[in-house]
Image 1 (cartoon, rainbow, N blue to C red):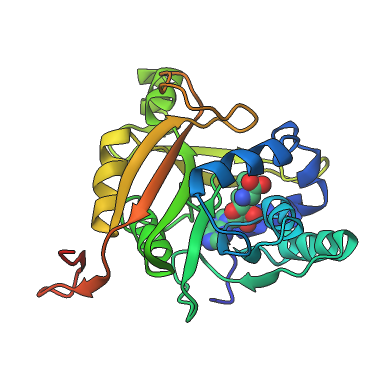
Image 2: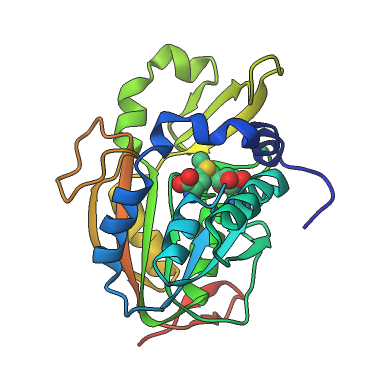
Length: 262
Ligand SMILES: C[S@@+](CC[C@H](N)C(=O)[O-])C[C@H]1O[C@@H](n2cnc3c(N)ncnc32)[C@H](O)[C@@H]1O
């Protein structure tokens, strides 16, 4: 971890005490029911929760007997998570790290990265291709062969439909990079923090997952609070990706990491 905080780290550190007031956090139990069906896990399996935030999924999974590791950039979100685990009397392994930079010795039976838990949340200097690809590769590397990952990311179609050419001219949306630039106050009374969010289109998600050694099994509407096995609507805020680890990653001739043939 570098000592300088990214814009998202500053945002979530300040937002942490009120994060669980967000309406979209109110469906955790149903979301965990859903993701457990998709991940097809044995009882007691190990799960890595990337961008775990206040640990709402991690804690619910730990309550159901899974061995959970929750990883997040924000110390304050993790402090809330630790407190939540204490109240629920469960043990979760919390790790503070940037999802684009972590490397864990353990291999997991499944991974989740939910509600833009890092995927699509760009730091001010992050490259919109490199950063999400690094996160996907780190997730892939953390999985056992054939293990599944369930991810939700912003839907590029909805983002394109939301903005106008005037927004593009004014720098609010960059259609070349699928990046939205905005500013949000993390908590009442605090100044807005400028942030960048990246949306994805399904075809590039298949390609990016493939480069990271993940085979996409299905893609559905995955808007927080409204998960379901339904076709992706153009205005759906988030896409849900269910993928399976296909191959170990190895260094390519040019030093770029590529998925090895399985
Ligand atoms: C919208 S919250 C989602 C939290 C949780 N997954 C949920 O569904 O409630 C996004 C989380 O991603 C974390 N995050 C943002 N960028 C990250 C990064 N590069 N590495 C790790 N965590 C990151 C934030 O600190 C925040 O806790």
